Image 1 (cartoon, rainbow, N blue to C red):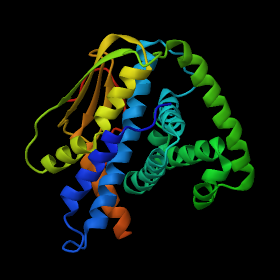
Image 2 (cartoon, rainbow, N blue to C red):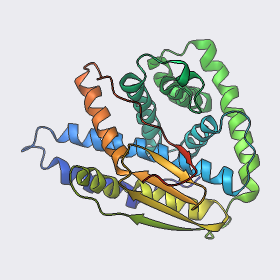
Image 3 (tube, rainbow, N blue to C red):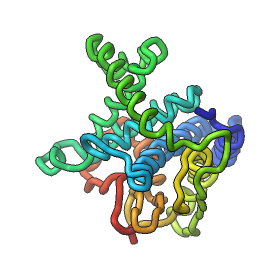
Length: 288
């Protein structure tokens, strides 16, 4: 898999400096940089999740089990195959993001959470960590221990990852773009927004994650239908794949939600009883 481009890393550096200011003058620079990294990395994971829905739809890939679980596994697999410290950090942030989301929105799950299309947020966090340690038990043993995965489960995670790795390589290998040729036409659009969301929208664009995932789609996969990537205000913290328009939609509200989740994690305070967002996934039509 292709490593992250220098343009993405430079974008994150510029974003950190712009928001944090000069460290000697701004004691909050480190916290600002961590919040922006956390939000960008969680957005990156969600975008690969949505690309999985796109691939299942456009390439008619078979899925055994929940498609939402398969999309999470694809996102984790894509990042693990980059094999970079930045990608590994993104996975750690994504797992932490699901833990914080579970505290904020799933404190007392009811039956609707158990029969929902998505697994519980905390389960999604553990699945990311399981695939991490399953792919490389030496490199990722510390995070598996941090999440208190016992030795037997850490060992069996190897088979989980091996199965997913074999399955995705088998399904996608014949459909992958070869020799750096453009495989998919992707148009990226950032819609203007004002008010409270403007800062989050600016941070999302400056992070470069939307453009990076779009470029991965262009260079790694062959989809005959042109694909749209649209970032905009949606009225909810979410991300979607819209099969009707062949469009991956990222809501600026989700970037703001990640920034808020990070702040709640730093404060280590009890999360308010908030209504649970719909969660990333497929949509039959774009959100308003």
